[in-house]
Image (cartoon, rainbow, N blue to C red; front, side, top):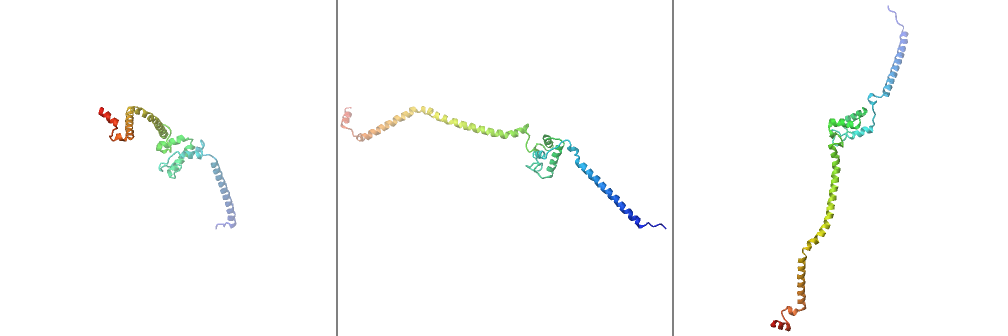
Length: 210
C-alpha cells in the first residue's frame, strides 16, 4: 500500500506557486512597459533625416488637383485617392524632398493637368501672360481709338472752309440774283402804277420819240 500524502502539505505548496507566478507576471509587465517607453522615445529612422510642418504639407496639397474630383484639390477632396496622395506628400517631406520635387513626382505620373496652376516656364508662361497681354492690348486699342476720334473733329472743322472756297463765285452769283430780285420787288412796291402797265406822260412821249 502506498503511503498517503497529508493534506496540509499540498496546501502549503499552492500559495508558494501562486506567489512566484504573481512575481513573474509583474516582472514581465514592467519589462514590456519599459520596452514600449523606449520605443516611443526612439525616433523612427525615416524621420531622422528631415522634419516638416503640417502647414507646409497642406500648402502642397492645395497645389495638386484630385484626379477623380473635378475642380477640387487633394486638400479639398474627400475620396480615397486624395487621402493616399496626401500621405505620399508627407512621406516625401519626411524623406527630405522639397515642394518642386514632390510636384514633379505627381506630374510625371498624372501629367501637368494634375497641378492646380500651370508652371510659369516654357509654353505655360504664355498661359500666365496671355490674359495680362490681352487686357493691355485692349486698353491700348481703346486709347488709340479715342485719340483718333479727338484728332478727326478739328480736321473736319478746318476742311469745310477749304471746300466752300471753290463755291464762292457761285455764292456771289446767287447773292447778286437775290439782290436783283429784291430790287425789282421793291421797285414794284414803290410804283404800283408802272407795275400795272400804265406809263406816266413823260415816259410815253419818250417812248414815242424813241
